[in-house]
Amino acid sequence: MRPTGTPEELERRRLHALTLLGQGMLPGEVARAVGVDRRSVRRWKATNREKGEEGLRARPAPGRPPKLQDRDKRKLERLLLKGPVAAGFGTDLWTCPRVAELIEQRFGVQYHVDHIGRLLHDLGWSPQKPTRRAIERDEEGIRRWVREDWERVKKTPSVAKRRSSSSTKADS
Image 1: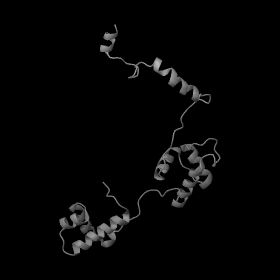
Image 2: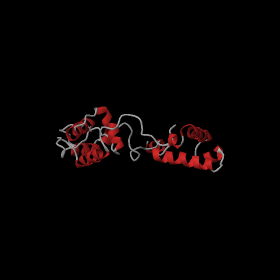
Image 3: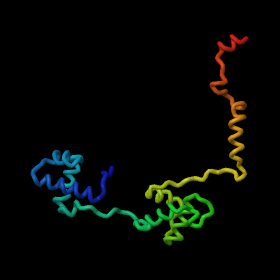
Image 4: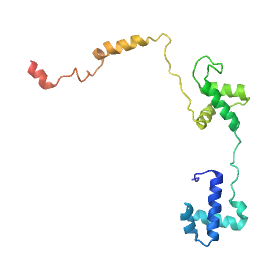
């Protein structure tokens, strides 16, 4: 499992461990001091012996570089905050296909729709699904029906309408 921290923080921890080893501390003591397993300290000591301090330095993360730079991501977030209508879409709902289209229009970068969710998550956003409702939906009529008719047709009567078996015997 990869330890937590930025590459620079992890490098500082390794170099600090190396300094403690140089002061004569045992690998077990160094491990407790920097919060790692003693095997890690021994591995760092061996790397230092073979490659020097350069072997313990942070290296760039492997993998393909991101298509959008950090400044572009900040600009994208500002565009998202303005809303889809301001970006030229018909309704006020961001979907992954719309965000992909916006990115292509504004930044000239193509993202597959399936990867937009990951990008939004990195920005602290979450993709939303639209609630499907009929255009003809009558909200007031629905509220009226729930108020007036629902009690009559539901299977389990409300607590106020229920009567105990002892009260029915007394009524007979």
